Length: 309
Image 1 (cartoon, rainbow, N blue to C red):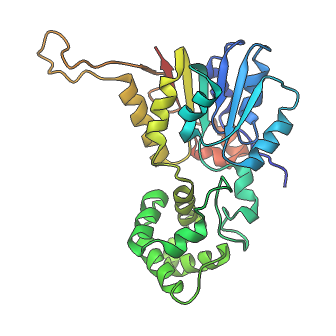
Image 2: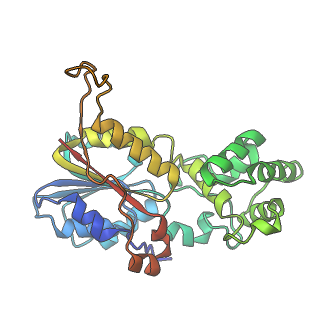
């Protein structure tokens, strides 16, 4: 399948990056390079784009999509390791960073990757195929309580405990190997009255995918690290698709912006609060109505922007 991923909030992201033609920009979630291509169009030959992705198939597709551009460095890696990547590339500061979080359209649609609850494929869900943890390992080896907590927290699934219980009952007799097996267990666990809100397996599959790829836990620290590497006036643009992602980004931005905690009756600040920059948009930027119609996956997208001072 061709790696085709329609970039979400493209116009808004490019506008908020405030691209300088000779600047250094980082796409920490390169994917099919839809956002990166627009960045490169605005860079001179002296400018540089660093494209990072943990999915080797995405990197191959990006190289093909960006073959007309010479000022690109490709990195097979995780944006959560961005400090290590910068150190290896001997990059001390950059003009802008973009993170488009979540799973790509290609990964969802490519059934043999195991991200989709449609069809019958091996349970995998790894964005980086070189890692050892898979969805199969999660559903077959995690304790019932841990499974229930993951499905509830990451999937916001109210029937998480029943789903976890039925997963553990099923695997006593046979290892759960395919997406179809897992879907049947989930469908059995959810009462019929609750199956009207989309596919019954959607939330559980999302939760397991987030766990497999460790999408939430490191995010706060990743955002703070990205801000540290920005030049003065540089911008960080992050697109989220999940409430927990958005919360982590919002909290990191708020803490980086800094806030005096001194009592209001003190004549001057004694708490030593420092600010690394400013939150550009207090409310997240969401996709326009026409984009939401053309690309339904953009409906949950939120763009938050931070500027270094």
